[in-house]
Image (tube, rainbow, N blue to C red; front, side, top):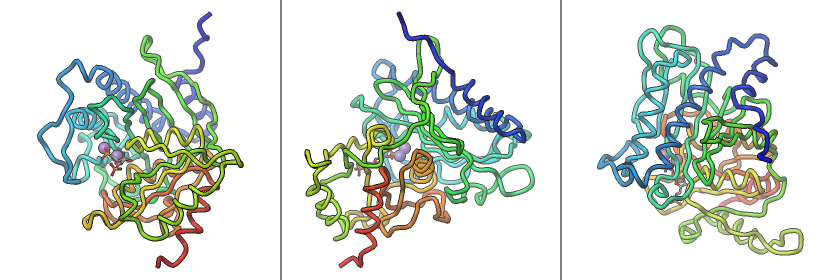
Length: 339
Ligand code: AHG
Ligand code: MN
Ligand code: MN
């Protein structure tokens, strides 16, 4: 007997909206539009090997990185839906240098920052990738939004989440009332509630870091990782290293099973002294999700990711995120004077 289909994400959004009598339905509408974009991207990702959508687009983005065809497809898909949805006044994308306007007459009260496709290096080898989104309320008055509407700290996010295109396509999001996970049933094109009220285990099983950079790490990072390796996991064994190279995939595994992910400062690239990950559309939205699920997210000098005031759309930030115990331990290590 097939498992009865449960609650759809549209139903869940309506239920959450009804908890807030002052709600106008615009946030629900915005999330529904992002979900449609996610379904379109999911269909393309799942067909990637058959369509002429693998490989590089021949372009490089503001990050100076090769843009994959699927990066471009995902970016265009989200921008086209967002510019005429009527719920946002401005958007920011990893793939676009400046702010992205909406169509005249379609300005709304929210903003969205997004990483259209995270984990691009994994696209052509069929490893999980994802889309990350962060939603704020606009601060400016008038019609089109401005840069400052996007440069708001994570603590003020009204919603954040990701869609992971993996063995199944899942949507995980929070609007500040806990974290909920939905799995796409492609046969009906609906996301059904599969992981209600996600809580990240207090203690990790996994640590996720690119060990190839160990020789570039600052002293505190090396000491912390060495410490993790010496620790027993409840006396049976030490942690396992799991590193996929897609932040969304590494984060999702750690959210469900318990784990700590690090992309700390290192001396590898002089042009990325703060590490590789971006605050607005990678670190901050995932920090909201993890805090809502009972975890933590800090920089490698102990600051809470959600309290960082952004100064640039693409600013990078060191990120330690995951189970509370291990992130708190990291804070202690990273708080030491780096010798
Ligand atoms: P993106 O594909 O959006 O540029 O993000 C890739 C990021 C992140 O997903 C992942 O954790 C990290 O790059 C992996 O970086 P390294 O290959 O340097 O480990
Ligand atoms: Mn990314
Ligand atoms: Mn990306």
